Amino acid sequence: MAGEIGRKTEHWGSRFGFIMASVGSAVGLGNFWRFPYTAGENGGGAFILFYIICVLLIGLPLLMAEYAMGRKSGMSAIEGIQSLARAESRSQNWGVAGWVGSLTSFFILSFYMVISTWLMAFLIQSFGGFEGMDAASSGQNFVDTIGQGEHPMRSKWYMLGLLAVFLVANIIIVGRGVKGGIEKAATLLMPAFFIMLLVVVGFSIANGDTGKAVSFIFEPKWEDVGFKTFLAALGQAFFSLSIGVGLMITYGAYLEPDTNIPRSSGLIVASDTLVALIAGFAIFPIVFSAGLDPSSGPSLFFISMPVAFGSIPGGAIIAPVFFGLALFAAFTSSISLMEVAVSWLEERQGVTRLGASIGVGYVLFMIGAAYVFSLEYLDFMDFMTEGLLLPLGGLLASYFAGWVLSREMLTSELGEGTIMNAWRFLIRWFVPPFIFLILVFGFMDKIQDQYHVPLPGFLTMLLGPNWVPPAG
Ligand code: TRP
Image: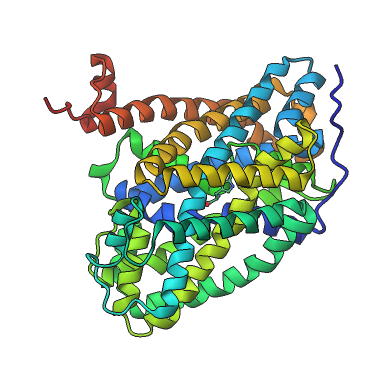
């Protein structure tokens, strides 16, 4: 049966625009907010080492696969995968990989928007300065009380107002389409972002405790390493590169035939990883010079940075730049997350792009209003998406690209030669088994760690020294 949905006829305005949109999607809260605390909680340099391995050997091949499948099919994730399956006379059920992705991106956006709203609140606050703030009175208090809307400066209504502003901005950009909305926003915001990043890093290195930051980033703490370190690194790699939800399939569908996929993918992966490391150099020197703990979890960013900016000379000037650049990065990522759900509605339900954007934005706002910034919801969704759904989406997509599609199917996209050989080897023999193993063992390791669920004896043996018997 031929689908009613045809190939996309729209294309990226330019190769630069495509790269900016992709880098804009990849570089986001994952780099600033999530990467530093995840590294802090998972062995510092050891985590960063695993992270780079995951990015190069899992992330890069999968990103190439997503772009290649997108351009080959000319469609977004679900239809794209189905049409490729059809071409190979395989089951339409492979479309499930796209379904998982659409759902996952929606879940991610449901907490992504909340963190972005915090960023907005901090940006506004930063204009007034953070002088005299200490950990007990500022960020800690903010994060602790925000869930109840009890923070003295930030009522629940104020936060919901900011959330509405954030979502409306998303709706406007996504509603304008890929070329006129997403590409344009990224082309304007990302260059500004890079300039601001350099300013902040320069400041941080000059004024913070750079020595301690360097040893934290490069010295591995092996005692903190277990299966869950791999799972954390893998989940972080998927999250940071925006892969595993089929978004890059959609972006690939808008690619001109002459854009070199392997080269562009390499550039995007390198930029994202570089920004994560540079963000580490923007954050850790300041965290250490303020005498704060880098492994304080999701609130690291929001507790440490205001305190640090309040105590460092010049901090009052640099703080708005810092929160502003993080907000730019978050915004160009959130529009890409919204695009996944919107393009699905637009294609399947026959609504207009703007109508779809408004619908998605409305549902998100309702979710936001219902759980009003509860940290439990955030924790749970973060765990479900990074710990389970993203790797699962990646597993399905890589298995599909490596084992269901024939080599010939993607030669038009990836070429024929060394790159194709290496890519095909990884996507068949390395990526799916690796994700599978990490998912199974990492997930169990994490479950018992977090909820103290006892594991069967043979798993205890396999999980090794990191497994601690649950109390009681
Ligand atoms: N990569 C973004 C970040 O690091 C988040 C993001 C945007 C994302 N689009 C995505 C994550 C698609 C997974 C899938 O903040």
